[in-house]
Picture 1 (tube, rainbow, N blue to C red):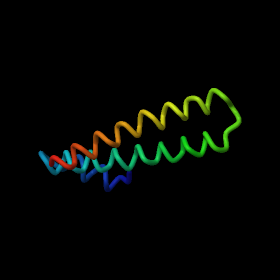
Picture 2 (picture 1 turned 90 degrees about the vertical axis):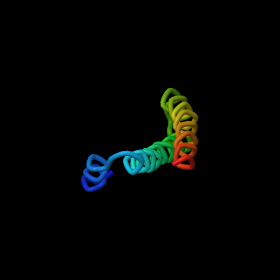
Picture 3 (picture 1 turned 30 degrees about the vertical axis):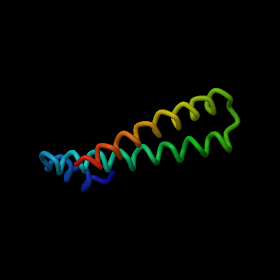
Picture 4 (picture 1 turned 120 degrees about the vertical axis):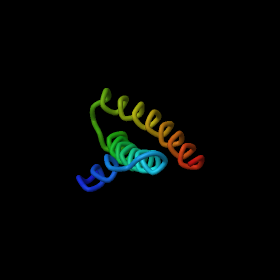
Length: 73
């Protein structure tokens, strides 16, 4: 997230804050998922690849929760 994004989040209140937070966290988690997929595909260290799998699973579940929150807002 950019400094501008973070300032906008800090200045927001109520539902607007909730929406911005969930949207930004979704983007953040999607970035982690993408990096973890790259590690699973291209990595050589078994422990790192195992951790990448756990990251994919956990972050994907959280993205789904954020989508449900956004749908309710």
